[in-house]
Image (tube, rainbow, N blue to C red; front, side, top):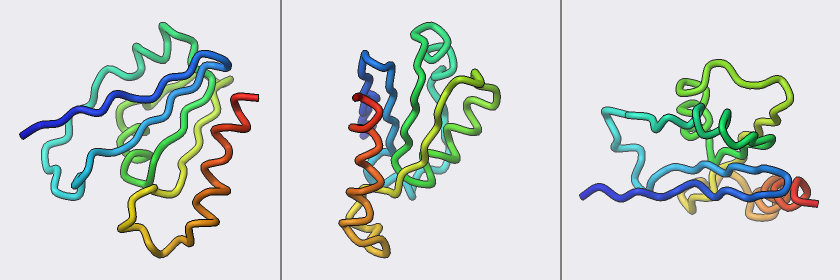
Length: 101
């Protein structure tokens, strides 16, 4: 069964939060959505990525990005990522709220 999770997309400033699918460690044949087209059409200024796997996939899917864009790889929110304490994760994820101000 395939499940799709749309990106979280805010309006001001333009923010895109990309994550990974549950159980993404088992994905063998990655296919990327045309996210670069979305970024170019909407003027996204911030991209926040949920975990190292999402960051690697984003870099692969979008090799060239506008210079004015801020890209932030956040620690994975997955409970499986227990090596990072919750307080540290929360502090890192606070950057999304800060970008909205």
